Image 1: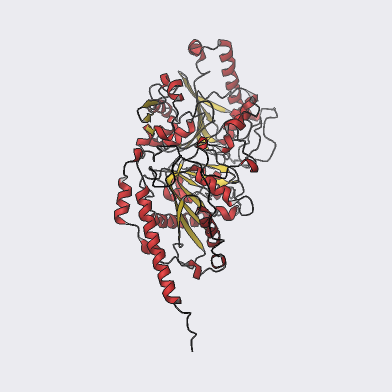
Image 2: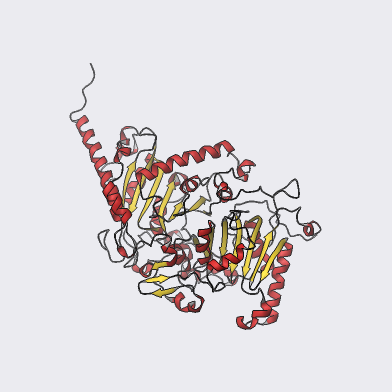
Amino acid sequence: MAPKPSSGDGRTRSWVQIFIVVGLCLFFYILGAWQRSGFGKGDSIAMEITKTGSDCNIVSNLNFETHHGGEVETINESESKSKIFEPCKARYTDYTPCQDQRRAMTFPRNNMIYRERHCPAEEEKLHCLIPAPKGYVTPFPWPKSRDYVPFANAPYKSLTVEKAIQNWIQYEGNVFRFPGGGTQFPQGADKYIDQLAAVIPIKNGTVRTALDTGCGVASWGAYLLSRNVLAMSFAPRDSHEAQVQFALERGVPAVIGVLGTIKLPYPSRAFDMAHCSRCLIPWGGNDGTYLMEVDRVLRPGGYWVLSGPPINWKTNYKSWQRPRDELEEEQRKIEDIAKLLCWEKKFEKGEIAIWQKRVNTDSCPDRQDDSRDIFCKSPVSDDVWYEKMEACITPYPYVESSDEVAGGELKTFPSRLYAVPPRISSGSIPGISVEAYHEDNNKWKRHVKAYKKINKLIDTGRYRNIMDMNAGLGSFAAALESSKLWVMNVVPTIAEKNTLGAIYERGLIGIYHDWCEAFSTYPRTYDLIHAHAIFSLYKDKCKMEDILLEMDRILRPEGAVIFRDEVDVLVKVKKMIGGMRWDAKMVDHEDGPLVSEKILVAVKQYWVVGGNNSTSH
């Protein structure tokens, strides 16, 4: 005789399941209703999702506790209460922990040391929620956001004064307008890029990834996007308030960064093109260290563009108000270092000069006879996090013939996106075979398809700036590839495999980062964050609370997060974000409730300085 079930057990379970499903439907109704357009106007996309709802039957069974015991069943009511995180003070609305202005001024100014990353000690970390400024609204959708940013989101007018004659940025009522100008392209970024494209193969997909040093408000990168080129732009947090913040508000990839004494957080042979438009970097100084660092991250056959001083100094020294001799010496040093690197000068006209890096050592005859001790002695490695830059040349990978591209030839984009990256086909990343690469792509195509069913706003234009906190091979970003969005692929410094080089070979962009520290960006700069196994990776490395607070800092109000991890990890995450003004629901893995890996979807509530919650508009 079968044992009797406990009284009401079946009915209770049924009511619990119904309650959870109804709650999830309500969550996605709210998610849709929360989405806003610039100036707080109703979002047509949000209204549509409100009308249609979200296929609630795809997550019909959220009762994972019945399949995975332990953590869920042992939490009692007193332990399950979330710690409440209070808002930080209003002065922290634009707080950048590792580039804090006051802390920076305590470091030496030589070689831009004070502008590098200097993160707060454990006892100095803020354990509160960074507030949005009053009047904050969701940025305009791309491509309108390229040209217009709501004033309330970055209320700083200093650039409109300092760069008034250079057509960078204009203040017009309640918006900033970005005319597309720049110090070195008064006729606009498009005309300037046309000049470059006459020499550099930008149109055919050969150039896909670019690095813009000292980017200003990143208009160069903004206008390259229409040509299917992704630029990683960076500028220091300096007296020109909010340059990088403006770039990200516009929907353009950018980070706070500087060429100082530490290697750039990118792998070797990453970028197809590097660019400096009057970026004020002393390229001829420090024995050529900065140009050698550009050479390290530039792929064989890649291009370096320098526009502005000292190029064409004979014509411009008076307008630049600088001595002829000083400018002549500056250009001579740059030419000497470029020759040492064996770059070939392809073009110089007006104030623009373009060099091309050779495809391998064999194609550089001058270098064969160079007896100087100029090559880096340490093993070639992409372990660059906080590593000091050296005045040495990174060797090319070995080639068997003079016409072979060192490190492997890349296909043009978009074929490059799913072609096998040379780092994988050559076996340079231990443990990742060609078969594993294809399997990874197929897996993330399935995952992204499931995400789009959960949150139908993905790839509608609502989420422009997207971050993958643990990018692996970049397959999440590849599956999302669209002109409506871009993905910052972050490879944690403690990841088991260093895959960022392969991500760049796919024509995607990314950066190294340690999530025990703050990311090099302003608050509220990402619309959607994807966190795959990030808390499993950082278990016992640093506090979950610190990582979640950092995610909250960089996520826009009403932005979304997708966590994918083991169920016991996500239960802890869900408990903690319960005190962070986020709303969240657990969703089963697309393969069903018996899979221990789950998805936790969350939306950050809208609230601003002085406001209490999402109803304070």
